[in-house]
Image 1 (cartoon, rainbow, N blue to C red):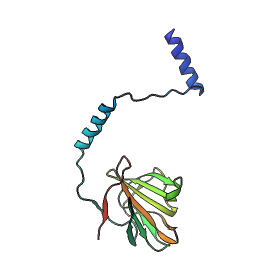
Image 2 (image 1 turned 120 degrees about the horizontal axis):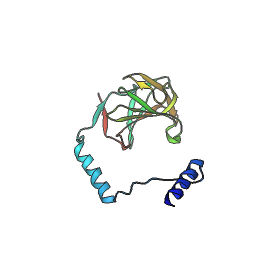
Image 3 (image 1 turned 30 degrees about the vertical axis):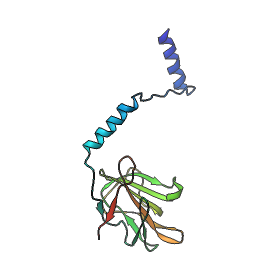
Image 4 (image 1 turned 180 degrees about the vertical axis):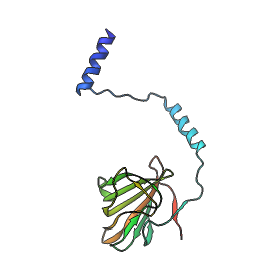
Length: 159
């Protein structure tokens, strides 16, 4: 009887009439301990990451990164080798946005006017990714560094 009921549920889920959702039922305490053990394995960065600026201009510190004020005709470039994991304009506050996973961190370039890359493309260091956009009458891009989980990472530009 159980086998018939199970096959009926699987049939209905295949037709799209029923959704089957699998959940992790690990107790919260175990999940927290696993997360803490992962944090202990990874060395914490005491000093900020030093990066080249993706475009020549004047960096203005923001809460999560920098807005780099620059002339409107400039192109912004990749700060490291990596793979484009997002390129689009779905996030309204960022306008055109590119995210590049370098393996060490995720570089986020926002408020672009035009993009030259697509999701899935491999990019080389200093390769042009797009053209800077205009925000509030000022041309430039926002630039952020995130860890693999999407949390902002402390970084500075090389002088």
